[in-house]
Image 1 (cartoon, rainbow, N blue to C red):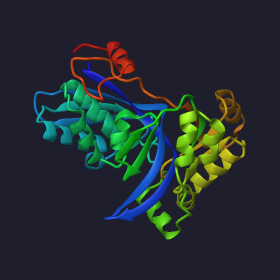
Image 2 (image 1 turned 90 degrees about the horizontal axis):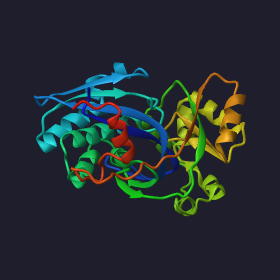
Image 3 (image 1 turned 30 degrees about the vertical axis):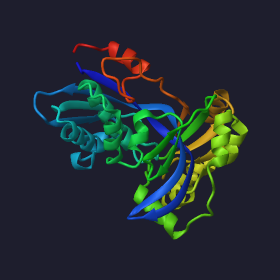
Length: 311
């Protein structure tokens, strides 16, 4: 049995503007929201310093170790905090190359699982390590509603007093983030500001949130991936409150006024693309524990671990 289990949630980008480029990186201003789709990360300590990662589901078994952010995260944790290694199992439910943060979620999940296993209490150091592993990995440590700036490493937690219900359209084809940003550079779009989205979220104003849904990478993603364009057209056909590509694609979310309307649209969609009804989630903060870190196990995860504990 595994010592710790972590739920690492996917995200959608309710707003995403490209604000510049320097040193081979693009800067962004984005408003992200965690959704109730997650990868399960299970970690068991080893007697040596090796990190062994075993992937399960959605074709993740074919990811080479040298390209797997979960492996990088585990090895970086051992090197940074001088701990023993771990056997890590990851059960994928976040689609790959979809703009939902799956790779970063796995890296963040590994960091949180190993922090729990080894009672690592320095939340600042863990966050700093996350920044080295990917632009939005620090955000994925906690998820929820947040504003992401810079390369995504500057994270400002946000609150929204209402749940947002969405229907995801999930093309089989993925989009390379690097290619998507390059396509944006080739045909940039007029700049927009996130202020309206921030105000609407804080007020729980669904109409205001819908009015400010935007993704500067949406059009580039659709040009690179015809299936992303098809997903946008499918979403639009149901007249949702708003719809957009998430991240650099290829997933598209349609924001509806209620979960019932999501079910209505899903039942009437006749295309072959996978669809999934989701809603936003904000994980409960950690309870007091023997190890006190901003990224400690949430109340839900502590209960999750009790269902299968033989440490």
